Image (tube, rainbow, N blue to C red; front, side, top):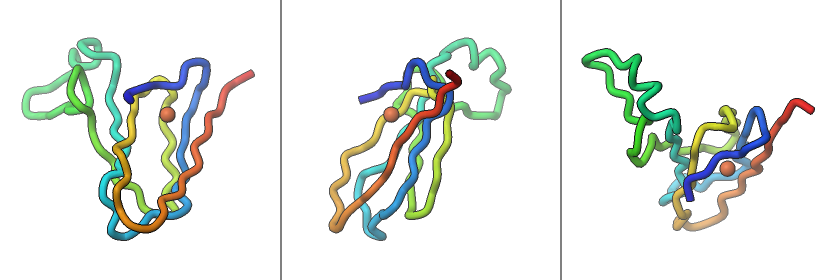
Length: 95
Ligand SMILES: [Fe+2]
């Protein structure tokens, strides 16, 4: 489900193990700022992460550390490959 992490500054996922033949398991990002960001859109430049679209996928590999602002909406597709996909997700905040 598309979500963000309110109350945090940075969110992250470290991918410990990702099968080579992974099916699904991509993380999708979508910018929730909608039209505010699109105001900067320049003709000829696509901003697929803006608005009500499904977002932009990222296919992880073992060893990737993904850092993103906690307000950035994201979701993860169901993993259906063989083997194990192990990831560690964490948040950072400024107390
Ligand atoms: Fe999350």
